[in-house]
Length: 96
Length: 492
Image (cartoon, rainbow over all chains, first blue to last red; front, side, top):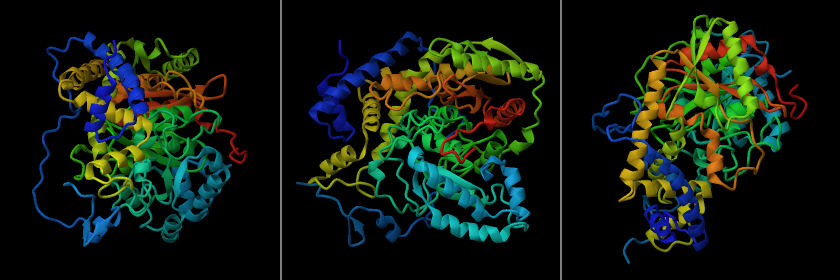
């Protein structure tokens, strides 16, 4: 049985902010299904008493003081932006 | 004979005696690139103007007390997912195709500058480091210098191919699941993935933040030790970089492995590993025996779960990391979009290649409501078991040795259809990233088709010194690393 439907692919694509065509949705449904089916081998493992590893090093939260310092200028911050206006980044309208 | 056939310490001596200049080294690099890079396609961007200006400065310092940087005058190539101020940085993706003027240098680039290396240009790779063959570059598929019908490996395929082809003596790559070691093996060069946290990731375009590490690719072990020493160390800009002292790695290269205890995991010489690769590894173990080391078979019982664990975790992390590419502040913005959400979706769909989209989709799925515990958290627990496998072995042994890859390089186009077949190239390198330990690949022979085979040496956390000592002793006893591809003729 297929674990991942085409509808699910479209839902996930929306969450990931990706536009997928019908053909791509079909392809991803099959490929992701293959990968997920393969990954389900992990269910063979008894992990009830195993702590998850998020990180291999013994690091605690690393904090620094919240103080202002020089990083880049406004001009630098804008120079790679696709569209700017009045010293700000311009984007399409958010509200209808 | 090329100047790059000499090791770093000899080249530096020639520089300081003023027998050669930094410009001579750049002549060698750019001439060779001109000759062979049309075929190899290792470089995405050349930076000759800046390199020449820097060479002029450094040539003045030859023989003086000022010109004593660890990498003084050395031409180097940099993987294109490492940010270089003012020099185009794309991670081989169309979404960053127009990023011609990045604002800052990655920490490792600052270190290279401080140690007086000279950047020649930026190296091709699989898009966002996702791939094992360089066929996922959105620009060109880099070719293996030993036989250009074959892939160079990936994702640091450009970094390995450029060194193997004699275009640069050293390069930097990055390794998330084998992306330095696998192409180093396929191209017959030396590549190390340092301990997680050893090298700052500041300015490395993130793929999977809990796994990514930058490391050097070189022709020999000694040069590799020099370059790692130059780039390693704590950086306050990377909160996962470790505040652990960096030893002088070249001091470890004693040539002595008497009494060294080697573990050989039976899973690394099992099903799927070709007979030629097995034979090369067994021959290498014989070399170690002859030098007074001992080896025993051990087990890393959770190895077979590493691939699933890796793809769930790395794709999940990638889906979060790549959310930043949204067409707002930099990079590609779709011209078709009329609303903000459309702009995100269209910019990303036009800018990302198929493999990158596939992994973002997989990661988003694994992290989505209702699936998080079953996939992402399960994989994190499996990671614990894999890590514990290594801890158990390292309680009794100094290093783990096995092949770097199950087979030598495969042909261009051979594995592009099925993602799972492609992923299987990395089964012997991925566990090392999951455990966070250091691993090196060094040349240990050739297949009947004349393609290089890599030997992988894995060490304890922060014990790159023992890894280098083990690798160097082997190199001293063999001559595999002295072979060069006949590409373009003039490299002989």
